[in-house]
Image (cartoon, rainbow, N blue to C red; front, side):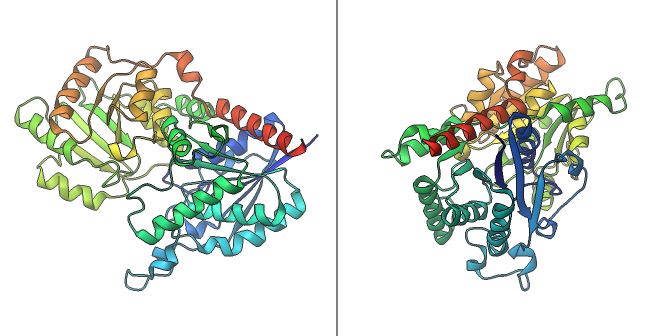
Length: 418
């Protein structure tokens, strides 16, 4: 029997600049191997701030992709940098809902999907899926990834109330909610104690082996002997969730103490999305010659850079303890030493420890970072930094996650039939 799924995803090629693209892309690529034909409803590329064709070839030949009209309120509807707040509720792409619902209904009439799947962190995707589910009656799986709301998130009260409303609709109307971390799963089970806990499923993020194989086939030029230790952070640096203030303070202190300098150490912050903000901090702390703010790279080129780095840096604040950055799984596959600046009580730290990695320091403590970085550099220089084993890494692949999702879809339609 042919089984079909309609996937609703904002993060999808040709978008560039977010590792979140990989979740929807790899599910759409691998699900057909497990009996599921895929249609994808995404946005017109104009909605993306940055786009690139480098991953378009990874979309499977049998995948139907429909891109419907959408605007980014902050770029397309602002006047002198300002726009009415209601035009960005629940997010800046709410205009997508207007075109996506009729586009999704057209896909449903043609494809007759058995399941609708939508993925956060663009809340509008869930609104689209909710609308299509209520109109069509097709079961809905909400890929929530991380919690959508908290006591102080979103900061704007109207947005927080709307996010809470969407969460409530997911719990009431979806067949199940999928989380990417144990912490997020536990959060929702506690938030909705009257709901069967089995409806909150766990499917983690992962890495794509095909991309890493391609990256390994085209290695970068060898670096000269005695080159400075290159520590890489690949991806957005948020002022709150990945605040580097304490890290920069620690680097300034270590430099003053003579523990490191530009001849021996280089921190590369690739595709931060906040270069101007960070540049001012670097100048203030007089460490601009220790830290490089590098532009975005095509995805596979970014993987090549990971494979060539001496160490990989993870940033995750305590207010994100129920989240694990998608790049963590890519870092594990890259096989390089990982320095994690995060809360030891959070899911990211727990995941790393489960993989045998203990080079962890608190993101909000300059003293802890200075101590942790010195230890990390010493272990790395002696080739003793802890790495995840091959069997452990293999369990983190996107292929393995796609098998889990296919089984979940099978379970959902079996429940509908019975």
